[in-house]
Image (cartoon, rainbow, N blue to C red; front, top):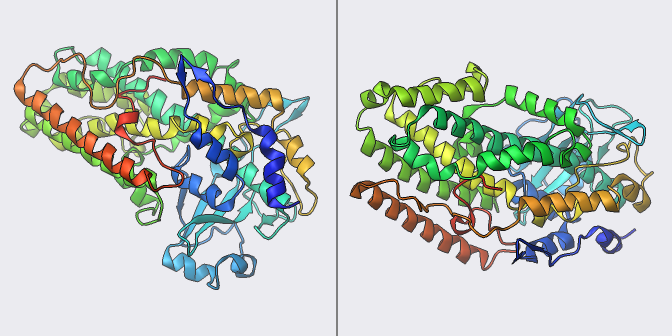
Length: 479
């Protein structure tokens, strides 16, 4: 089976485009691009940097002992170099989904489904593209757990990539999207509504970032996340999703929500073609500068912070109810300095605007081509090589009805509506003083400049990366 034939074959999974949602037509170019390129290794690697879940890989300087990739296995894909040399140069990256191991799964037609806690090794090649070079679908090496390579049959290699993507899709939806944006934002918001009066400067600063979040989360608990919701039809089902989120919350760290620290910790400071990083860091710095100027206007000294009992109560509730009092998470239990307040509020605003946009808004573009992002795989992963066919892949992927259901979820999660309020807009004008008003105007000007930079870059980018453009992201988690 040749790759062009596989492309034609899988066009059956291409959900019809040109739909309308709330009377606003969807822009279909990116979903068309994904449908045309999803099968390619270079685009597969690109998505770990700029797709729906850009927080999944780390630099690999030493192979895990349970991932016995040898020099001989990957030599043909390293362009004359060696694995050890490329690790030393910083060109090898790894995807490791160990936390998926042993998760409860749901039954399908009387049999349990499978989710693979796999590992994927990736390489930055001479074209500056990130490509997968080895995949192991379970944590423990064994004869029935082979390491798949790009030199295997096209269907074997494609099937291995699909199983890795299935685990990534589940982690994206349950953890990166729902838990780390929607649900933690809800904690920050409810605590603010409980602890901060409406005249409090931090309440006035953050109020635009509360909009619709409690409403969308309340509805989503039933229609998306609940026992009868859309995610119940995934490979994990409701119980598996709950356990995945529980494990992830237990491992959560405060620093991972700070984009500059997250990028450095994962070793992605210099990896090429990482538009999520490039645009995100610029946006982070703009938000941080805005928050710093605003907070310092109201809190000239650290003593002012320590004396604000309402502010202290707010962060205490977040620590208690958001991360369940887990001191190892690094989340603050109180605010002692102005800088600590600036850091937290910067993180909050970036999370509900930029980060949510980055992990929510690409969903129709990247998830409507079902083999590219499938929350459900119906057959178990391969235990040997050379046994798969294109029919095997068809039997593994969701059927037509299931595919339409997942695509519908992506449409709803990325739909337009008439009264969006974009980042930097403060329609309620809660600030009366001239200084905060001036600070807001400067913030808006910097965001507009970033939009121009991104538009200029995207004019020559294929595909364009639009998800951290301030003109296209909302102030709050509203959908």
